[in-house]
Image 1 (cartoon, rainbow, N blue to C red):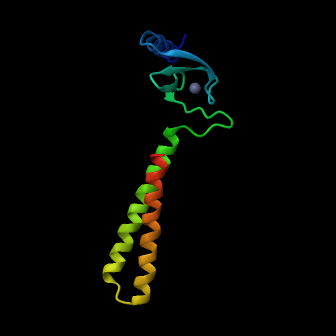
Image 2: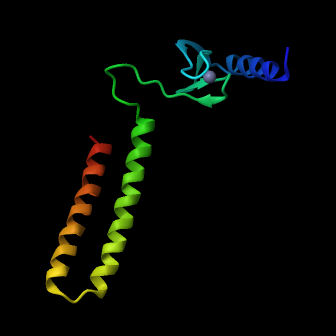
Image 3: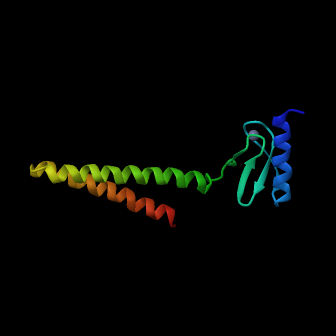
Length: 118
Ligand SMILES: [Zn+2]
């Protein structure tokens, strides 16, 4: 038995001892049985967390939260940019344009908040 296999078996028995349960699902990468550890699904062969999305199901929160967080960071960065431009801008037409951009990004942030807390 290779060292890698020994380590894998060690991880599995360690997980089972600490209350993990084996799932009927298989790792999409290596085909090993998946384990439920606390509220997370792990492939102990790949030694990484797996997110299972069944057909017709919404993507789990983990994915959503990451994406939404990313969008939020982008929106905040844009607002900062635009705010900087507004400070240096004197042309009323340009200011109006920048103002509507600000409200667009604020709307994005508002929507993000609503999606997170239904
Ligand atoms: Zn795997």
